[in-house]
Image (cartoon, rainbow, N blue to C red; front, top):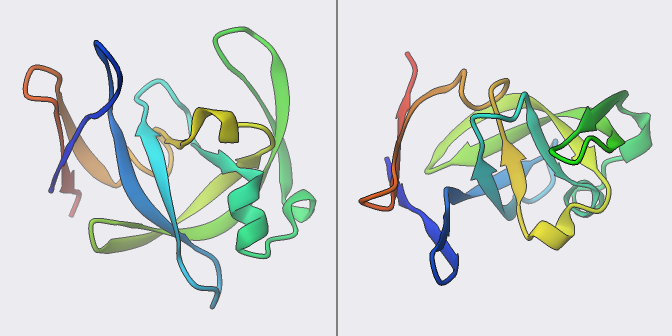
Length: 132
C-alpha cells in the first residue's frame, strides 16, 4: 500500500500516514503517525489513550529522550493499530504533550518489524509491504 508524504510548509514534507488505534472493544480512533526509522518504538499522545479510556499511568513506565536529550516518561499498553485495512497488535507508549506535533510516531518495534518500508522523497511516497 502507498501513502503520500504530508506537506506542512513550503519545502517541508514528512512521511505522516493515517492509522486507527483500537483498545479492547472501544471504537477506533483515527490518528496520524510519523513513520520514523530513528524511533525505537511506537508512541502516541496520552490524549489518544484517554479517548480510548486507557488508564495511562497503569502501564509499564519507560523513559525516552529525543533530539534535545530531554528525558520524558511514557506508559506502555497493548493496543491494536489498523494501517490501510490491516490490523495488528502492538505495545505502544503514551506520552504527554506530543499533541503539539499533531501526530504520533511509529518506529522499529511495532511497525518496522511488521512492514518492509520504502521511502521515496522525490515521488513523495511511502510504500508499505506486509511481512509474511
